[in-house]
Image 1 (tube, rainbow, N blue to C red):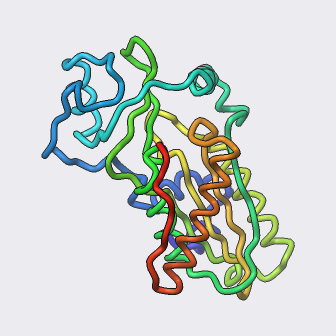
Image 2 (image 1 turned 90 degrees about the vertical axis):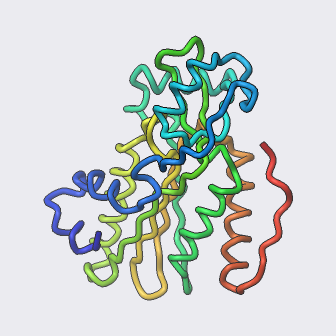
Length: 239
């Protein structure tokens, strides 16, 4: 989807329907029927074989593991299920500006490497038909990523700032469906020559402030290594 198509939309509020189509990683859960799990294969011990088989069929046999939620996560899920998504209480959005050369394709690749490294980023949260809510770690899932070039479409600085602000607000209003969506998405908006606005959004049920700092540090290290065409070195990922 080109930025010119977005700028033709009558309202930036229509952006949600457009952005959802951009990154194949967020469109559907991949099919992988080669491995069927049994209750002994997963972390959560309380699932019957019948329920596990039903979940595997529902999610196209793409489940890597299943965990119970922490008490804090259960509280966040409760608020999400009963309308608190509209207030954005647990919606986290990081915004910053970048001046200088930025390889957008490597930003997306770096984020997807983080997804491969950390199962929590590939996680869904389900409640329907279960005795207690559970989190499902999927085998293959990538970041929902968007790039738009404002600099070549809008000349007035105030217009670019207005579009960036509207993009952020629309992104916040989209919120997240915890049982279906990729729960982290990122956007890079080019605002001028070597000038970018970066919007990075996720649900707080995935990460606390301490974990977010670790993730940002790892992202920069991976990106720098990819740019310099060298192997990145990170400590073993903690569950």
